Image 1 (spheres, helix red, strand yellow):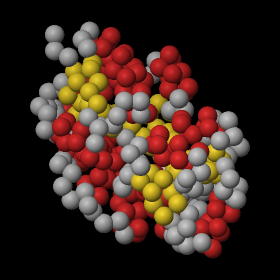
Image 2 (tube, helix red, strand yellow; image 1 turned 60 degrees about the vertical axis):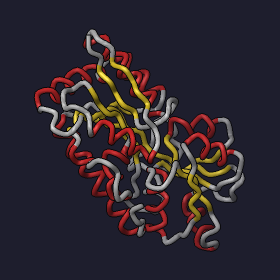
Image 3 (cartoon, one colour; image 1 turned 90 degrees about the vertical axis):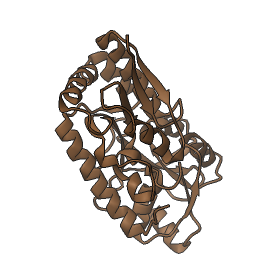
Length: 295
């Protein structure tokens, strides 16, 4: 019995990894054969993505990833080792709004106050990210472009060490997902200034959106897509789509995802391709306006 390998271009314990394991467990039951998770972190997620890009297009190797390797890494790296647009989209698995997290003793309580402080002190405010080209980096770059602020970028090796340093007060802010930052906010360890979606988040309805705080149209969500290697036949993509969407439609799965602040996706291959293209357009504009050079 041949197992299906699902590659995650991130370390174990990440939101991507957690989501993939939930889906894989149910797919193993549906398919009557193991769906095995293989973590291949590193290289700004390019190593894992390139591995899948080179795999046989037979449905036995798949990739579950957040935005960067599926929509904009080719704009940030001269030789990422693959072309994101050649992956065969299967479905959007889930999405989660990003939120602007600041250290609890930063003397601001709203987005306008943060912008004012940033403009008075150019280059003094610091923001964490999981590295150049991560959603957190590009979200902060979008805030700079939209407001005229200039900040200091401090890259980390992942979301957890970045968040730890915000809690410790070593860095001023971080665009994080709701899943990991809301518990710290509830414990009074950080402040949440704004939700980076166009509507407020159900888990923290008291936190305004960044758009309603004066940065019109500001949007940054983290999402997770499932794709197959280039040249995978449409029939295989549609069969996998049908089975994965059935998993995402299960009440117990939706409840588990809701508990970690994830909103289930479940899109057709065509809708998935359209969504990826819209995200690529959004972030390519930010990358261009912020003057981020390919590495």
